[in-house]
Image 1 (cartoon, one colour):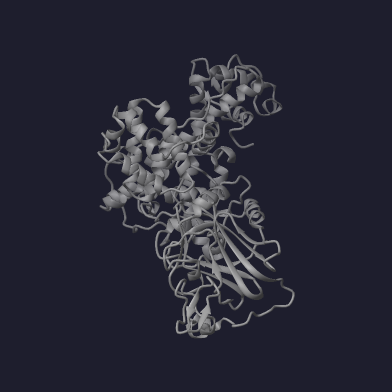
Image 2 (cartoon, one colour; image 1 turned 90 degrees about the horizontal axis):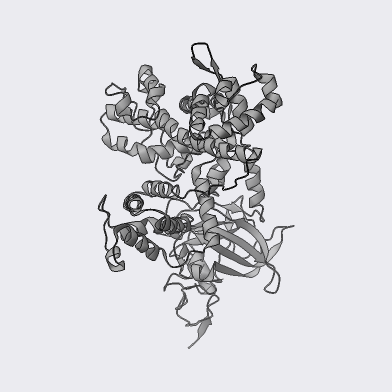
Length: 624
């Protein structure tokens, strides 16, 4: 009997079959019959556009996904006209060296049903899809669609190449090193115009100061990259936020940095010195063995002695929920197992097990908490040079600012939010403030002022646990949180009982994600003016804790506890500095205390902020 050859897999099928028996590719002469309504708009012959290069083959190369061992998509479309969104009908599709289940091969990427799934992305280091076209065609852009399940399988990094013939060199048409996949299933990533490898140039443009991104732009960036872009020092600050920005006397480079960055850098150093060997399960097992003095077999079934979570399975659940964080969590557990005491490891295991048993936001919080236990190497340089003295004092001051940030964050946002929810009788959202509310407020500080906290916000979190408490609580109640004696304290210690106006459970309106809310807060459009004015009121609550009146004296007293020697050395440097001669009336002082304070005959001390400002400017802690 007569047969026909499949153009995709070259299997010979019986005449009566309209689809390939092997790969289900439509028979060429049956293409018109099998098209969907959308495909009817697609030309049967390639449409040529004058002046554009024509390609015969396309290669899509996936370099990374969301952390799974597989990668998948439901469809890929290539467009010859972006203005009308007209795409080519694709049939000759292959996945070289890929491994797919039956009926989930690469040929599905050209159809409106099914999906493509490749098990070999980790084994091969990449997953490649080849499109062979019957004639040379023009290309302007493309579109990817997520599959039906498992978002961690979604592509997050890829390149697109094309060539004019099978013997020609591949040319780079598009490069997407870090992409956030859509939240929905069977959902488009958005139509992408070829950038010809200029992604890094576009990123540098963003780093010059632009902070707001439209929907297509923001989907190009992961949470990590958004954190980098929003915290860059030369960012623009919108006029509504300038008052809060100018109120903060601490330098941008200090406010935009965090202990976690230093801990991650230390972990990178530890990994470079000693590569991660063995799997994470074995690493966790060793940690449990040391903490509880158990055998390997007993450790595999152990439960947490603090919270009674199953240890190994809970911690593995935490680990498997991450992508880029995996290696850092592995290195952290390995390092802490070597360095921490048994009692210390009890706390580490409890944090990890609880995080693994709860929501994504709690998982991120657990990661942040344990990673900060990895302390960067302390400089052992015994040289008493001026630069060494400065570095020591700068490190002490940076640690103080980091802890001050957390207390200010608590007093400015978290505790008033908890009080509001307590007053209106919503204990569920009150308990959400610490994790989910923290993500909202931390993301807001990041996008508007470029401030990073020791807790890296989970930008894909649902915005809940944050509220418009300024509109609800009376001013005298808010003033109680601002008193020095209440700084960083729980609402239950600040205000035992009060009444609150019910202003609802949403902060600044309804948003799908924390990332969307934070990005909208820096939307400079005229229609967004009212929202920016609302946000500015909350930023001012945080910023005033970093004014010269509020932070300089506590910072000096903290440094005096253990670093009086270095401060007195800095006094000599400061008195020799031209700025000292210009800004301070006292020309000589026996020690740093006598210089920072005016002391009267009755030994009453009066703080001199102008002297402290000069000292801390020389250290590089506060703005010039």
